Length: 323
Image (cartoon, rainbow, N blue to C red):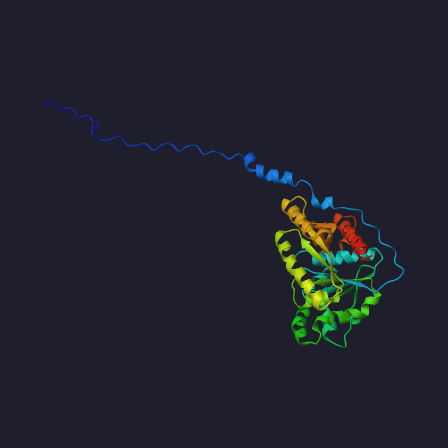
C-alpha cells in the first residue's frame, strides 16, 4: 500500500506577520569642544590676574632709633583654616628680619602657633592661660625665646579653653589680655596675636588689646560671606571697648591664580574694601605645611621661596601703613 506524503506546513493567510521593533536612532555625541566652550570663554574673559594688576612699589622701612612701645595687631577670622597661624608666624619672622622686635601671642587653645615654632604645648607648665587667670603669674614668667632672632612667644595649650568660661565672672573680663601685655609693650615694636576661629570672649579680649586687626581671608566664597559678621564685631568692640581699634588690612591667602573662582572672589573683595586689602597676596603652596612640621617660619626654612618673598612684602606693607 502506497504511503501518503506528509502535508507541508504552510502559513495561515489570515494571521498577521510578527512586528519587528524599529532600530533606535543613533545618539548624537556632544562635541567635547562645544561642551567646554563656555568654560573656555569664561577663562578667556578672566585671563588677567587681578592680584598682579594691583602690584605697586612698596617703600623700604625706615631705620629705628629705638624699640617700643609695640603696636598690637590681632590676626582674626572666625572661619578656621584661612591661614591665621601661618600668617602670624611668617609675618612676625619677616618683621624681625627688618630689625623689629616681635612678640607672638598664641591665643588659640589648640596651640597651633606654638607647635609651628617647635614648642610642644602639652609639656609646658606655664602658658598665657596662667598669666590671664593667676595674679602671681606675669607675661614675663610665660615668655619663651624662639629660634628667630628678635622674636619671642607667649605660648598656649588646651588650658586656655577654660579661660573662656572662667573669665565670665571676672570684673573687666574683656581687658584681661591687655593687662598681661601692658608691661611687655615697651620691649617690642610689634605684638601679633593669633586668635582662635570664633568670635567668643577670647577673641574679644584680643580685639580689646589690639590697635589694629589683620583679617586673613581665603579666596573662597564661604570665607567671603563671614567677613561682614567679623567687621560688625570689630565695629562693636571699637564703639564699646577700644576706640583706637581699626582694620589694618585684609590679607588674601591660599590664592590660586589658575582658578577662575579665586580670581572672582579676590576681585569682589577688592571691589568691596578697596585699599583696605593688602596688595600682597599669599599664594597656595606646599611649602607652608612643610614649615609646620619643621617648626620654623618659611623665611628660614625656604628663604628663597615665593612664600617667603610674599611675607617679606607683607611686612614692608604693614610697616608702611603704620608710618
